[in-house]
Figure 1: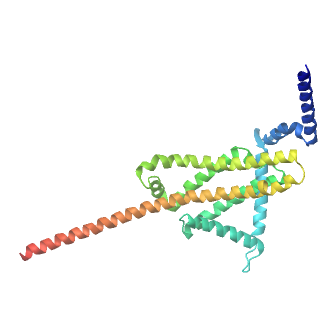
Figure 2: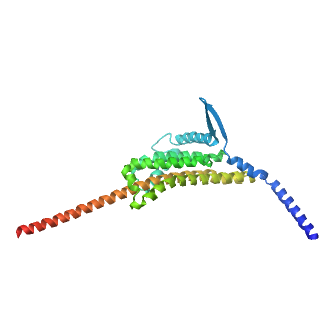
Amino acid sequence: MNVALSASWGTRFWEAFVKELKDLIPGSKNIGDEIREAILQWRGSFTLGGTKILITDAIIVTWFAVAVGILLFCYLGRKREMVPTRGQAVMESLIGLLFGVCKEYGLNEEQAEKVVPMVGTIGIFLISCNVCSIFKLPPPAKNIAFPFAMGIFAIVYVIVMSIRLVGFKGLGASFVDPKAFMLPFKVIDFFIKPVSLALRLFGNVFGAFILMEFLGLVIPIIIPGAFSLWFDLMDGILQAVVFCYLTISYIGEVVESAHAVSERKAEKKALQVENQEIENSANNEVTCEDTVA
């Protein structure tokens, strides 16, 4: 009997203790509900010409981020001086970094000049969209449709640019490098790459968004601000850099494979010509000996 009363008292005490502890934590009563509301995207619509057009928070924030990104980078690169200003130095450093990545993956100067503008634009776009969460705006990448759209766009750009740099033959040759049996694996790879790009972008941005929402609800003062410098700012920039880096690497893979196949064909042809010359020389020597005899 005493054991039962003791257990009942202990249970009631623990429940009361947990309740009081939860009441001390700001917003803890509805953390799950508040995070769920933060995850769910806002939806609205408007009618244009009799057609109902759906609009979400991801669309609104994307266009806002694009406008801010354009204004910011135009401001940084508005003047080109012989002695670079601080903004010009930042832009030139970023462009030089992209050129360095292109050359690292086997692109020459001319090819890099064709690749850098679009890849740089993708980087500016993703940075603008990702870091908007530092201003308490929901990043578009938390909506799974946004990362997949970016992944599909990137792989289409890779294919188009590869054709532009090495032609249809070069692109086709890259599918059978180093051996013909690699063809099905290379085809599958082009379906996996956009999925990989999308999931990487979505996972990192979505995870950082959930963590910052949780910290903002549980510990709303000081600590979220410190974590925000990494998860909202630096992580957003890092994911944009990784996305651009991988896009360049995919183009570089095709170009290097196409060049490797072309070089092997040239070497094979040169070897055949050399063997033919040796054979012709041997035949001529035999003919001369027969003539002398």
